[in-house]
Image (cartoon, rainbow, N blue to C red; front, top):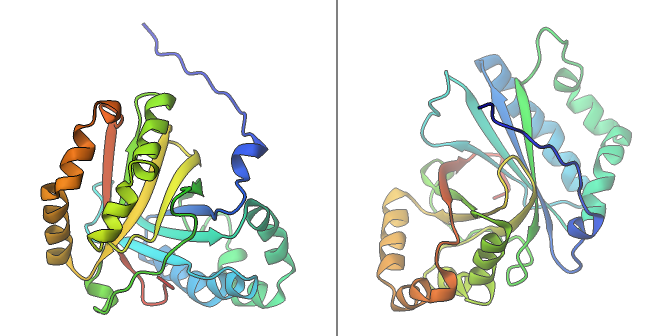
Length: 255
């Protein structure tokens, strides 16, 4: 029996706009060559991030995987962009087109030829910040960026209802408060409103190094409140797939 695929192209403007909360874009660049990596780094550091800063967007994160992905030598770069609103996000492309400094600094990337592209493809994930964590937070870390461990987690739900239940567990159930009390240095918690994996939520926690990361999660698993919260009947079976991606920030990353 052939698998069926149903495509439904509906994105509600209401879902995109949530007053009082940040609107996040996570861009994932897929690269193949060292030339592409060098060109993208130069573009991000000297053109894209400065242009975002001029447009009033700060705390932009640029991250690379700690472990090389097992995907035919494919290289990944994660760019996290926190907008103050959906409207700021929607207006950004036009603003960049009018930014002469951006156009000049990014010329090698922006004018790349079809047979020498600066990447293989770009993924984009759009998120609304959680109600109880409405704004991006810069991590309070002191270790060299090369030693830091940033853990990006993705929690898919088996249905939309179970997904909303997991979001409630973070907000009303105060899983966010638990992470804060245990010092996980979370950068963001977000409800995915457009992406290849849905229904889904994502969040990013940060640590000084791998040892610190392991110690924090050990404390989390032993915490009395977590044991109580995770045992509550109303919060059972609300995650069907949990993906963990370990990243480190580039030298020019704001975060």
